[in-house]
Length: 308
Image (tube, rainbow, N blue to C red):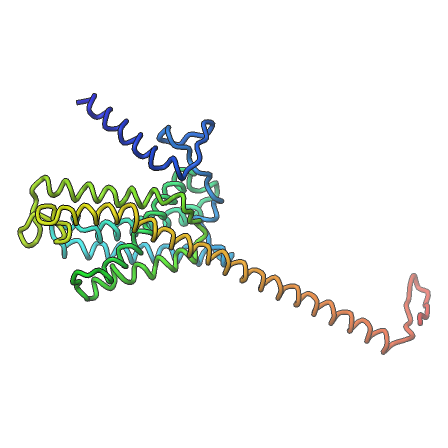
């Protein structure tokens, strides 16, 4: 049994290493926690604990806490609705990951805001970065596939909150926070989707039944009736759709950088103009004072002098 577990672990390590090798730099001097992939340099701590748009950290912490409480409430509310099959739907996987991101980020922000020392560790920040990459990409993916799929969907408050509002929150979070989005980190949403694809196959092999009593989770993933279609959808969703939507997240990140640059340039321009105006007013007041009183009497050390 131990031999099988070790072999499985080595196989998974090699598989992830092969997937990550084309998009991550290998550095023998800096190995990650897994020991076979070098960890990417961590951004500045403020990227995770503050917003680059405002120096008011308290406002950003409040935003993080509100998002965490809201998504956690929606997640808890959705569990009884899906009964004992809650874990089978990818929408629930997505929303659980999104909730984890907001809760993890809120914890980091609170820890940094309340701490008098360094705050959260680098490992905690790096894990939060991984969760962020997965949550942003899969949220946009699930929303797009839900509303634009050829199969019928249910329109209601629950669907709007979990398949519409979630993407709005993602767009706001990408534009508001300071966490970077890089194309080479597409490996994380791909792994997330890959785990669900494996879960779908194991669900089918285990002979489990869905709501209608048939051996599938979604009708378009019926491995008994349309196996080629099911496998094609799973592979395309993992290796094509996920990278496309991750590229969209990276585009939003680039848009944030451009908007932030314009915002800062505009503020700097206002500060310069304000400084010049103040300097002009001071010069005019001094000149006016000199013109109004061409002859002044200055007393120094008890002796009066007249100046022109």
